[in-house]
Amino acid sequence: MSGPRDKPPRFTVPGWMRKYTPFLGRTLEQFARVNLLDCATRLAAQAFLGAIPAIFVIGALAPDWLRKQLVSTISGTLGLTGPALDQIRSVVHSSGDDTATIASTGAVGVVVTLLSATACSRALQRTCERAWHLPKAGARLAAWRWVAWLLVWLTALLFQGPIQQAFGTGRVLGAVVSLISGTLLWWWTQHLLLGGRVAWLPLLPGAILVAVGASLVSWGSRFYMPRALNHSLQQFGGLGLVFVMLSWLIMFFVVVTMGIALGYILAHEPWTARRLHTPDDPPEPAAAPPPARTSPGPGDPSGDHDR
Image 1 (cartoon, rainbow, N blue to C red):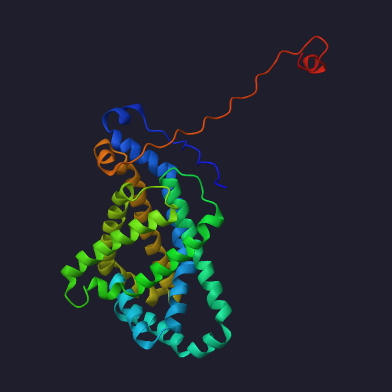
Image 2: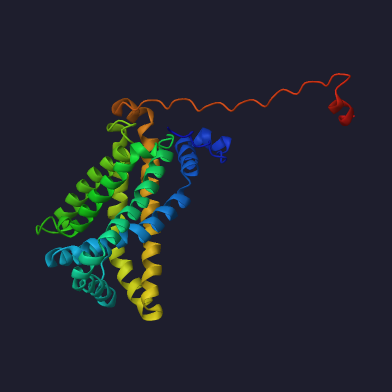
């Protein structure tokens, strides 16, 4: 059974903003409703604690060529070089050396790791529901969607290296292919996690915004992340890698949350709503009025107490 809608945000834009910059006003109210930083931080934490370990578990059980592909994806996305790249290689290849141990004694652990990684799916589903002003879907209807989303995204992440290179064609065409594939993935992600409660076309603006934002984050990371990671490793050791990666994940999911939230705003703009056939939101449930206070009668002890 679906839960109640989110309460309308307490933040309201000033009247002059509604009059002169209505789009900006609607955007700020949408960010307040979605709880932008809260959602991004929760998504980053769940990805760091669940999804990233799941990637390394899969890498440990994968053949050698797939482990190399995993290193290529991580280094290509973050632009890693030097000690930071050596650290990632050592983690992946040391995991690969323990494949027999994991396969014999850690089958239950692998399943638990993958199931715990669905916490990221659940957090992302809640973000999509907040952005589209929808009630929370029932667990029985959404559980298989969490697993499906996780498996598809883990597979896609493992092959991001070849996609970014357009399978050997070059970075320019790779950027185009990566943008198209990212748009398709985020389009499908929203539709899946929202349980089909929103039609495909209205979800397209958000998918494009997230794909463009993620591509820009990946491009900028190639300049910032190698220097930051190598400096943190020299200064703090392995703990520095944790700090920088968690900060990067928060920044990435801020972009994701903003893209999904802005996608709702764009899909409801008059010009795009007509072309995307965006339905109007159902009205917010009205708050129940407070019970009327009746005047106490002459024999009512509460009336004597009030007096």
